[in-house]
Structures are given as structure tokens and as C-alpha cells.
Length: 181
Image (cartoon, helix red, strand yellow):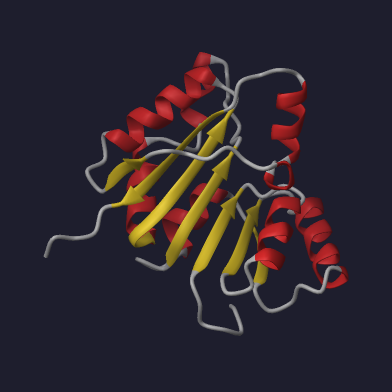
């Protein structure tokens, strides 16, 4: 998928790819994959990359994030996964649609390389608590502190809007525990 063999970082639900474009330009020694289910957002990302001089280390995949992690990514193939502001499905009867659930976390543990990390952010306190429970319940992960807030150029569009509205942003980082074998 990439022209150079180097660590791969994935942005699940990358939106229009603004953050992904920033990272790809700033860290050319890493490969960046944006996963987004909406075609228009993927096309926007693909149009912007060449204009910014980004070619070999950035790709986009139009698919559901959960499906990509569960079925497409090979075991131990991803260095880091960024999951920022996933849909919180706030109504109780819709919680079953949330991305971060125990089966997803188990699939992510399989996909991340040993020592790989999962970066999370949301403005939804209830969902954040659920995210923490899911990751803490999986023995393949350990929480890493401190978590550094995003710089202005590293904020997603959602985060910029939420910060402007005065909403608190919750962040966490989990590392895949290296096998003791």
C-alpha cells in the first residue's frame, strides 16, 4: 500500500483529513492511513495531498473503521491508532453502535504491534468513561500518562468547535503490552 516500508499510523474516522495531512507532512518517516466511510471526505483528502506535496506516505481507505480493524489490517501491522471524537451515539438504545466496545478493543490489540499505541479523544464524558472501561478491561493494554493536549494545528475540526463552545475534552493513550514470551 505504501512505497516505503516504515511504521504505519492510522486515523480512524479521519474526516476531511486535515489532521492526517498535517502529520504526513510533519512526519515523513511514518506512513499515514486515513479511514473514513464518507466518500466526499476521502475525495477531499485525496485532492489536498498532492497540492501540499504529500505523496508516498499518505493513503485513504473508504470503509467503516470497525470493519477495517477487525478484518483488513494484518496482525501486529499498525504502530499507532488515533481515534478522535468518534460518534458517541448518545441515546442509550444506540450505545450498541459505538465504535469503542470490548470486541473492537480486542481486534485493535491484535492489529497493533507490540508497544503500539491507541490515542483517544472525545467531548462526551459518558462515552469516555466507557472507553476507559473497555481498554482497562483488556489485559493487552496499559494506560500511558501524561496525555498531552493537542496543539492548535493538531486539533480536528470537531475539537476546534468543541473548544470554542467551552466543552471539556477528555484524552487517553493506551499502549499494547509487549508479550512476555
